[in-house]
Picture 1 (cartoon, rainbow, N blue to C red):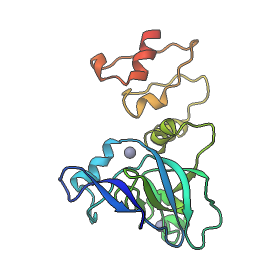
Picture 2: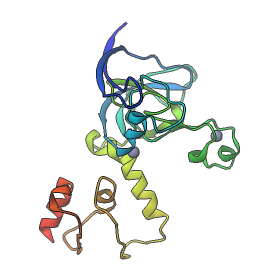
Picture 3: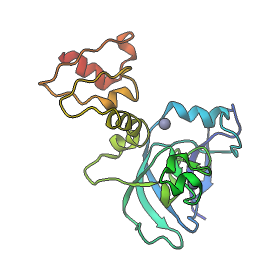
Picture 4: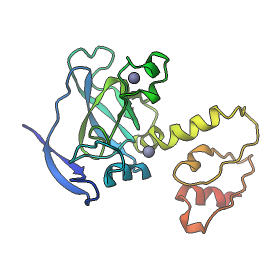
Length: 212
Ligand SMILES: [Zn+2]
Ligand SMILES: [Zn+2]
């Protein structure tokens, strides 16, 4: 069996450890992803410290995954080898519970969380159910795409459900790992940054602030 490197949490509250594991095989309804990038989210602490009930250890965290489908499991017809995909916090749903039948997959009674209820992206290869996949355009760099799978979609959903339309004035409170993804400054826009000491800013925000 071919081996790969993985970063796992051996038990709740323990330090990360780099281990060698067998490359996992996708089961029915699953694909294997060759991970190219994985963002680090503060919510990884849920897995690190055991803050979610029933986590099985050792567990590989990581729910901001960008990569390429490397193998498909039985019954998978809509996804093919070589397709670029991402996996985020919402790692799949059962499709049968009351929430799912209402189309509210995020609140599935048996929802899966990538990197918490199954092994996530802190490894060279991972397996994910097809319900948890998002297509990733060729134009997106993997390192830029990965954080969009959690921090980006969280900010995007906040903005698109806010009722704000293009050209409206909005305020983003907190320009950190999430907030800076909600800001897309152009040279013609005014931006006022009020923040904690400059050293806490993301590097990209420091560049924007320098332009104001
Ligand atoms: Zn996250
Ligand atoms: Zn469900």
